[in-house]
Image (cartoon, rainbow, N blue to C red; front, side, top):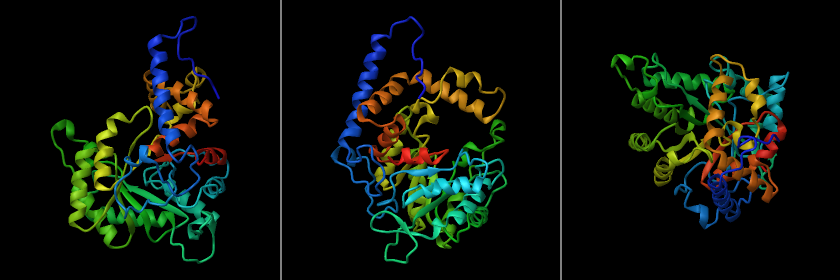
Length: 372
């Protein structure tokens, strides 16, 4: 692991920064030690002690109960030289009941990630298995109704998608690429309010309710088992929940950016979701990898310029490093005390806060690290 330089050379650490780091360390330890997870995420039953139980949504019918406490993301995996086999190896290392998050937008072209995931699922065959009582996968038809791997995808708002039927058609295409008849969780990727190309001219046409209607149709037609949203704040969550309730459709999840370095802005959203029984999924639980200590000055020197994904990531990582030094230090400190990796500490902290962290992995070793 690379040690990040957090102070200029020959300059002593400020007392304020050291004190802040110690305070953050104490807070992180409070959550990680008091929780029954104790930094081991390999179980699919996430019972929590009184210190963290208040962070969980109050809904006994939530479909994520007794599932894996983490989800697997497909935004930027490295599939080695044989993409299908490489992704299949990652899938085979996941615990039973793991949710796999993808979308039509991931990949070089729309649908690439879903198509590759569908091929990998066929390659490894896990989509047809069930979980037994020992939380292991098998091919027998027993009485356990918990699917082995649970597929989650998303619909992306676009200016030319102007009707509920556009959602239904997109959902059918996603299911076809994934190789399934029904998608476990289908989500609106983001509010249409942020996808308004003519907003600068004063013209806004927010189609969220149209898309909600399309999601409701997908649910009632059996194309999907559950409905979710992504990147919704508290007001949008309440509005969507009320809309779906009138159509007898449970809104079960909201996916937001959530990690140790960025969570205060999500406190109200999390509170509203808990009140309504909506499970919160957190993407970027490692802050783009910053909490693992993976980035140093050499990485930035080798990052190409121009408008590209790595440039964008470089800007985000640089911001995290500049603003969140005490947190990064504290995570390393807790990891050292607990005999775990920084990534495991950061992931477990999200779990203890009642979040389902969406963890990316570039190889089997990273999967095994994430699940403890």
